[in-house]
Image 1: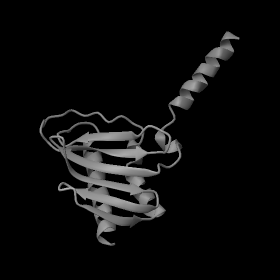
Image 2: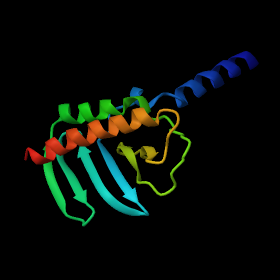
Image 3: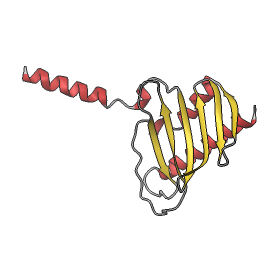
Image 4: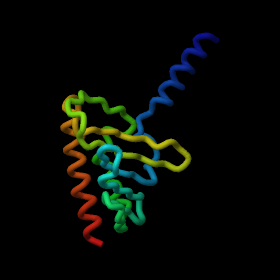
Length: 143
């Protein structure tokens, strides 16, 4: 009986630790940049529907987002979905932000980044952020 309990506990632990990529697709994702607590830019895109861009002045632009376009955006951050990102911070006053995965009925997941990061996967994250902003700008400007 004790052996069964240990096996059940191990299986339960594995189920809890499933990576986010094994979960259902999020309903939306948000990319936000801030500095000193103030929003610089914010992009929110649904998995099919109307996306939204907000600049630092609060002006909003809406644009269409297909399921395929959303999936391309999601794929950029797939390695970081559900994974904690840690870095060595060398600059303390750089811009920072988050990529946020939202699923109905579940707590949001986020990748929090900081422009002062220089270690670990920082270069990879920032390259993906550049690609994401290029993709999102093209979607916004194509409306």
